[in-house]
Length: 436
Image (cartoon, rainbow, N blue to C red):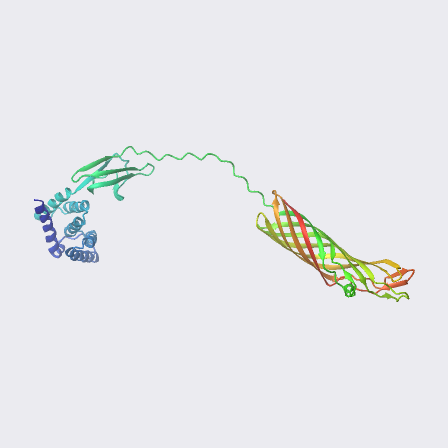
């Protein structure tokens, strides 16, 4: 009996397939453009060819597209056949139901065949009825959207296990896994959906700390040892053979003011004082007029001192510890003194004879420092400066400066520069800086 019913259904499909073109032409078409109608007919004919080859999935796509563009009982029936071949009995039953509902004027023979097919498919599927949900809730079965609650009819599904979910905004989701038996309708009552609990307001935390004010102004005090290999000048040119010259040693102090531009750039002014001393021993220098008694080698004590005023620019890299790179420039107004004395062959000590000369210099002062912050305002650093003094008016032993000695009478030394055009100074320093 079951085989007969299936044969009747397949007979209906075969008849609809065989006479598709004739029936399609005879159908009373809905309002549609000619292009849409032609497209629907082409997709239907494509589906017929695929159906005859057993390409069920591709044929289903073709018939479904044709029915969507231009609904005919032939396209809907053939789509149902493809769905049954693919084992999608619930969807096939929906298609047969649509065929009976949407085309009430089907010939009696074809309607009876469709009704028999619907009865056969109904034995292969079950149904799920959802009750008690919130109006407007979304219903999904096995991840497939099946519409909103309340539904006009139970949802047809294949036999076996299914996951039903009911979702509504503002409510906790309902979820149930059920087993569906063929030919029966399983009813699911949704327990009263609870609203999503509102999150409690966050506990008041500590008030955010205000950002510390920008530290733009600063004041710095630095001290350094001064080291120079030579002051240069014409006086050094006479220090030959047995003459011995010591490096110049001294000290340097500077007070700097700064203003920060951005996060790492500083501009500032500086004011400082520099003093250094060096000695020359056994240097030969003539007297004028030449004395009758031989003069012994002269010992010189040279002292350079002066005040500096300039500007500087620098950048700070890193946080703790930090690296400062600076470059300064300015002017120095200073003086240089030379104190001379000697002892001749007869152990006669002459001197000291001293003279002072003022001079002007420009200076360039690159500097590198490494330091750490000590608290919020104070930082300490060590570094080294390589200062270069450029003589604008080099200091010199004054011309015609006369001296008197009981043994040598009245005499003068020749005029000679006490410093060269360029002096190099190395200044290893320590510093403290306060920002506010």
